[in-house]
Image 1 (cartoon, rainbow, N blue to C red):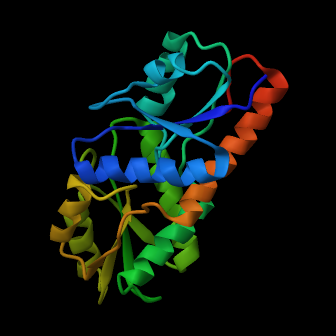
Image 2: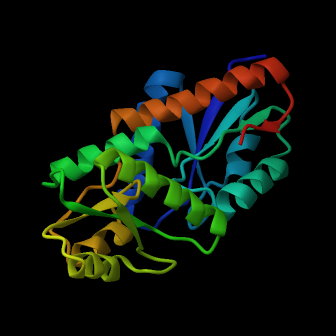
Length: 236
């Protein structure tokens, strides 16, 4: 069996900054694990099934999602099945993960946050309760790391909205409120956070060395499993 290839699967966006970020992330991972292909489950192409059909050898599909909802649980497995590729392993999603918590803290510090300042975790949101549960896990991890309760606000789907949460935290007596952007890339969702009324908004996770390292870890663990078992199975 040849060495497995990585397929990085993202949601897809019409925002060029988001597309460029995913491409840059794939380039950074490629330097560590070999050429990495990119696929999208929505908005853009190519779809994961298209990319997998182009690969002759084994493949590791890594969902670049911060929470596991419909796309991770339904779209990705369906695409793998549609590809009819015989040697594929699918890792669990990128988040939640303690590594991402440390990146979130660095982004907050870069935005001017100091211990004692309140934090609101801003996520895109989802109608899938599994994804919302993952966001709550991410918020709990961040709460433990900063030593204070971190509230959750949503940018696109779900309630409460980020501006409402920021306002509520202020009414509760917070002197300073910072928004931790639980997003991978800059784009429309992140731009909306500038209107949330916070004292500072952290940058998205982006192409951080620790994010790249987390993707590498996901790939290596799944590749070892794939080489040991050969047939398709999900590592989630």
